[in-house]
Length: 362
Length: 192
Image 1: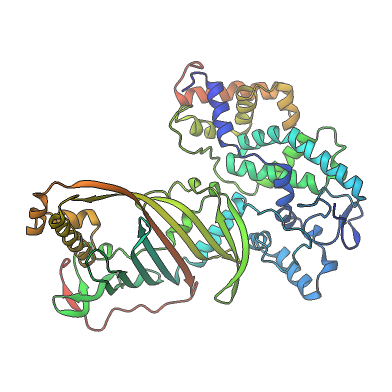
Image 2: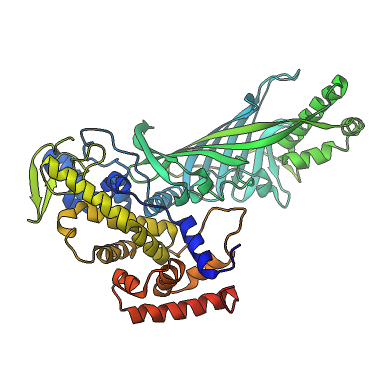
């Protein structure tokens, strides 16, 4: 660290300032013109388009974002393609606040995830999440392909929070049934993912660039891609799913500035352990990991917690007699696609009519 | 060079605007400063504007980043330069154009009222005190401008006064008070 305060200020500013070039200014000119409607060109529009634009200019800031995103009624400029428009901090804040407002109370989210390790598919998942105020429902399916002698598996369950009570629907001691969990942390233990947390983390420093337009669920949307994923400090936290470093983030935004779809990719280096030259132990390890996964799913545990429990079983004790080694390091890549539907529409989430009351988990 | 397409219309009697799209036409890729000129003049105007941005943008970026933080400062700079881009014919003859655009950037940022943030990506070399960004953020806007531009970048009091539309003695007062407050916040009695 330099000792001189003036040098420290200079370095801080130079590291933080994002330069603006003449080309940036010209490329962002549509955004600038959105703030000054008098520079629009009604002569080239139909009457209807001009009327829509007139309403848009009188509308709120979200309308300005829409115009900047290119989803207004203005015709595309003829001639060569423009450079990508990078969203300014204020535009992104408008997108974030419009989305949070629209999704604040009710809606649905379909989350599809896919996890690979060293390029090999490990697991796919689909969550169908419905929320309305404090009531939540998560109907999910996890598919694990056949690998290393283990058969493929497909497991489905429903986690539900209704009226402050926790319910789940899965195969347990009493077979496939609804269970009413009454433990002290039953609701928290259900751990229903809230995809809206991603909206809070969209940071201007990620420098979202405008991509093409498309139609999603009958709504015209604009694609925005983060060009600087290191500018997403909170998302890079391993506490937020997917774990690891966010390597790609794309959002699709409608004309009101509401996020309709998010695609996020996380990447993490994983140490793969094994018993080189000891096939018997290797088989035990596979059984051990299968037991860990099963317990984690059954009791809604994290991998570390599940491993701690299995470690003290007969299988775990037998495995610990062998010398475990780190075989290699591989990239674990998780891609998640979240699509929001029924935005702001009330959802009906009721307690199941018949549920077996159980205390605690498992 | 692509010529401006469509007709030329005049908005409020002073601003000739090229028709044909959302961006002023003329520049081969991105449009050009407004003017409704012939191709040769448009090329000249674009070159003038590029040279102007190269000259003025560092001062403007530093001042507006000092005033509003890095992200909002960049937005303000981009909006001020976009304003210059669209009003180039009228603005290029203004004597103190950087000062004028600083005011434009200020007025465009006024509506936001966000906390001033000086967040920089994590680095391993730790080139400044961890408390410096927060300490800078705690200064008043005028104090911060004086401290960053005069103290951090070595601008003269007169240069900062011209840019911010104040007197050199005022800048000096803000500098003295800002430095005292900054040192107090960081718990240092001198520069080391």
